[in-house]
Image 1 (cartoon, rainbow, N blue to C red):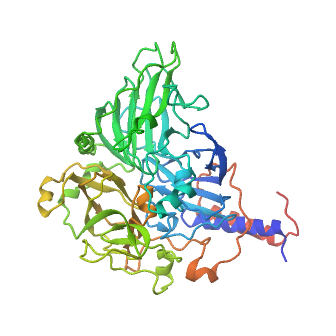
Image 2 (image 1 turned 180 degrees about the horizontal axis):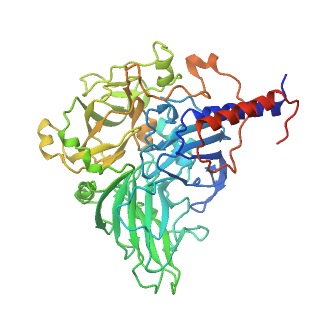
Length: 599
């Protein structure tokens, strides 16, 4: 029997050949080795258990460039199964790497799994997070920055620095306590606070913020312009973002460059990401507040839960003091909707490719399918609490949809999700949308509840063509923006209102459409789109060699091979296919003909 070292070496040689599959010569590889585990932190002054990546809370920023190949070995050291998903990273023809329950078996506790995907033809600001078991409420998230290739210009001057801010509502209760609370039919209630990059608020008010809370200090140079990337990685709360006395020039959202407009504040809803240019053009008599405060909360505690970081000029003459900059009026929801409608696509900018974004004239494409999806608050179905879309609450089968389709496993799911609400009692089912590959689909998201909902579609960017209060009707199409609606992957739907999106289904796979509000998602407010290319020459990525099997296919699971440590291998340019094959074969030959290997 070969030694453990020899098995490790054989596996590494196989990995070299595996990497060859998608290597295109000019596209670099980056390697990461991540350990996801519990850690202890006190973001609001009370010790609690959080989820860390390599001991960091939040996790490290994944900083890559268009077309790079990303290989991330994830070790699950939690006490429950884990999946990481890459919100907004479109993973062309590769839903195998999506990291949600419909496409991947979970990584069992104590196991590792290696994600392997390419950020093909993408730029922008995104984030990753754990997608199962309400774990995002405990952390496990981090930013994703996808930079332009040098040959593709950005539509503004090169900033003097890049700052990632992850804002999130936060609860002192553990994620396990919070999900139990939902299962028992209780609301989450107002958050205990709002965090900036995992840290609590600056002590702007001694009556509100305790002494033992660490806050985020953002160091800047006077006169410089910074690109500030802000993602709401929280679980249920819309947050208003603002920097005292500084203008926010919006330049990008979730992979699309926007018309550059000036805001003094912007509502950032759960799951959304934005980039701003911020010029440090104020005097340095004091530091300045950076604020993320809850919006639309029916609670007097909403104001006291504000997240506060500090903007510190290098020549600052003193600490910030006084009241926080005033938030928008919660009693005027039209303010927030008008903000959202003002965001436009920059039609003259290049994106990840040299062609202008506006060359894709979505308003001239004939719609092939229409789906009206009505979301309703949680209700009792068969004695348990569930949230629904069109009267269906998604039931997660033990066998992922993607695997069940590949292996023709019967009875796992139905391809009969209704395109409109049906006049029947709500029920729990595994019903998915039978979407048309290369179809152009109109989806209306109708919110009949009393809270803001956000929705995210994996694998795609969609055009947010319209939103308004009331019930959507066929006449609502007359209000659509058919010219320069922004393309993004997460959009808000205001209470008692609708949002219309359009999307070109050119990315084959099975893709998740979900409520990004974690309470609604956990209770079943999601559906999958089956976008299958029936052509024989389909370019969809094949089943990964390291697939984890579960459910009805659990018997196919092999023992985990020896873990590969990618630490220290942060970037490896792709070498030629011929060279890589020669390396792998030579290495494998040496291993098989040697009695011992020393590393």
